[in-house]
Amino acid sequence: MNSQLKKALSELTGAYYEEAPKEARYPYTVFSVRRISEEDGVETYSLEIDAWDNSPFYSGAEDMMDTLERKLHRCSFSTEGLLIRTYKGNRQNIPDPDKSLKRVREQFEMKVYRKEG
Image 1 (cartoon, rainbow, N blue to C red):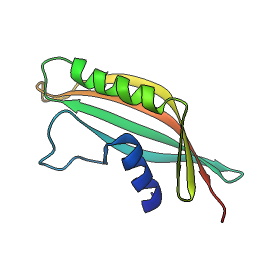
Image 2: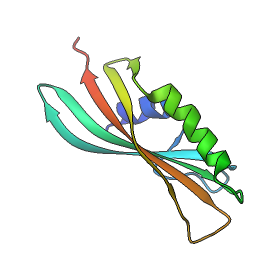
Image 3: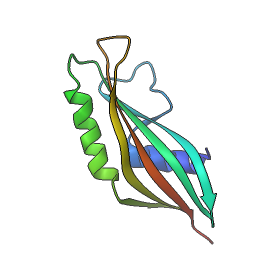
């Protein structure tokens, strides 16, 4: 993924890219991106965001994801050279082998338009 898109998504989501640093405090979010297609200059991606919490219940991670979902669904985010549109998608709780951790994952659909000039 190019650094311009990575920077824009970090700013938009407030999440870490790929994995959180060891000193990250719970709860936190992490994002990853997978390009699905490109057609007529519009790139389509799957933007996966994971909310992590070290709580006995999913509610903290779910609340974080609820907030992100409200922010990102039908969002238009413009930065130098890019226009990013996001839409909510598949969401689920993911059991972790470490029962003290709770994870909620959502896969957003993302369209990226490159600005000319």
